Length: 225
Image (tube, rainbow, N blue to C red; front, side):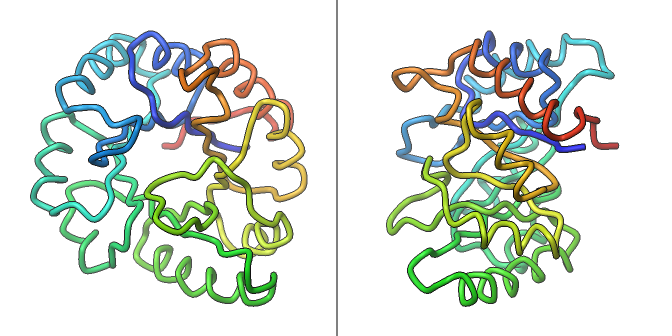
């Protein structure tokens, strides 16, 4: 069953929509200077609401970070009670082993060198992440971009990597195309942010639609243990 994460949440109402739609993960962005950045205090407004939901239905809470001091990241993790940290920069195993929670590591896929080279380069990074017991997330490379780009990369590359590793697929997913992406790539999970927004704001109808399409294509969702 395909897991899914609704990322870049900035208000309790949409976080609850995602949680009640059986999202497995909720993403809260703490990367300085990005559009969806929130403060730990704003995050706690969201988290407090989510934690009032029945325990069996609660998604995991994921904080997004990029090349920030690990002490700062751990402070936010502990303050907010996060379950995981998603790392969107150039972090290494030496860095993430200092964090207080498991990690989702973003792997940036380049489309400019052909499928074979893109697969080979990404596989090296994914193996490093998985060997350390962490989760790999595939997103499109874009120079200067931290976090997700909202753009898709070559599905052939994604399909080959997902056939070898349990990965989360991100980049350019929407309610309209996520079913086809799951059917074609067969990832362990999918991740969306801009694809469930209208005019840059999370859209509850799109969140619900995305969740429904994941369930139809991925055989439903099951919460990670």
